[in-house]
Length: 164
Image (tube, rainbow, N blue to C red; front, side, top):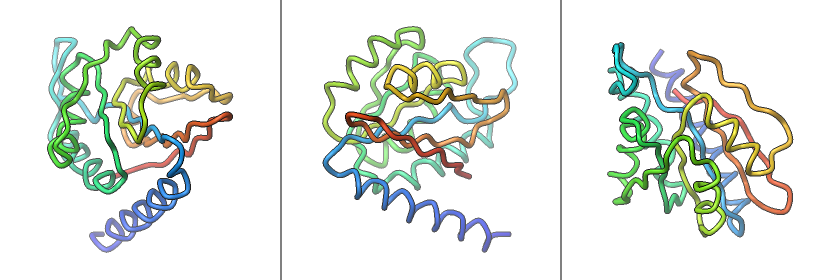
């Protein structure tokens, strides 16, 4: 089981390295939905233990992807998903309100370099569409393992990966 997990991480790391290197002249946006949230009655729960492990996995996968900016919404679960990578890279997480897709788009268009955006199952599809992707995205209620790699350019391209 550990050997299979390590093989998957190696393959994912190699694929990400290829995608980042081929898009060196263009910015790449890595988008993820927040990791698994803890059971809570409130609307702003922390990450669960599984969610914290997934956030750590994301940091390991993206640590060499030349990420220069990280955005998360005002909710704890998105910020906690972004925190391990931010700590690893020595970056601050910029808060972008979940309902302000236009504001975040303005910031993303100004950036040079690669960016991580941590959003929600209902905000990631809207953002992908605003970036100019033609195909509609769908994220299931219990889908936390999607890693969308979007290469900007005249015609944006996206690769959908899954991470542990």
